Image (cartoon, rainbow, N blue to C red; front, side, top):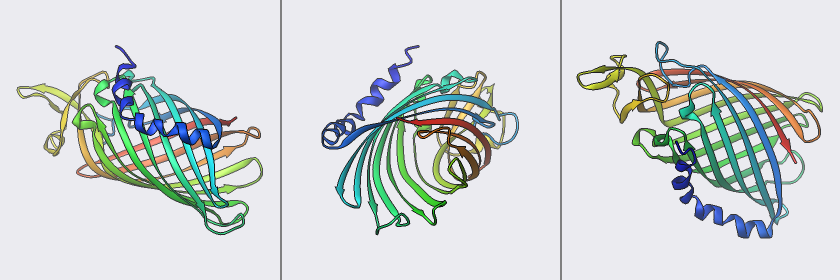
Length: 295
């Protein structure tokens, strides 16, 4: 299989956003480079109700990002960035993917001093090519949020997104909105503790084990067969499954511990629990270990 073929068509739609990086980069400071490597375990990569369809998976991914920053006045910054990520799923090769996308963000500090709040708004694009080409997609997002230091050691952040993604197959297309709140506590110069809470509403994909019938491949779960929306048979999970596009509301919570390994390097161990509720319920526990370095 030509692994890079899905990226060719998805990349074409990002060309207008990518072209904006050239004039901004010429007028801004940078590039500032960062790199992240992560190992992640999730116990329900299929996003299935508890039972026979639940499958776990271990992922490895690496990401690099280049950013340019231009000061518009003493309290406003324009940031342009370009990131690329490669992800390998050790259990299901169809989920292996390459992603690339730009983001443009306007940040404004309200007031003066280290405790003044910071607001931001921006747009982001993402092209993802999967080893299962029907999952390959183009995504566009409006991003927004704010951050504020409550004290020298305590920081509050809220990050929001409203997005839409178009894939090669309608099952993997959709729209969503999300909010994530984070509280950072710098216990000392080395250790940071994070508490995370999130909310998401919109389309997602649930996968059910399938069996062959006179009507073709159908879900083993009889209740799943009555779900509305687009669906079809997939081989992503190395055995018969039916993928279904569903509309869910997801709540998440988690915590992380992050020690500094040096002036520009940090390690993060994080746990998050996700509960999605729509016409069915799906739970997922995610544990990740990542290292980030700013050059």
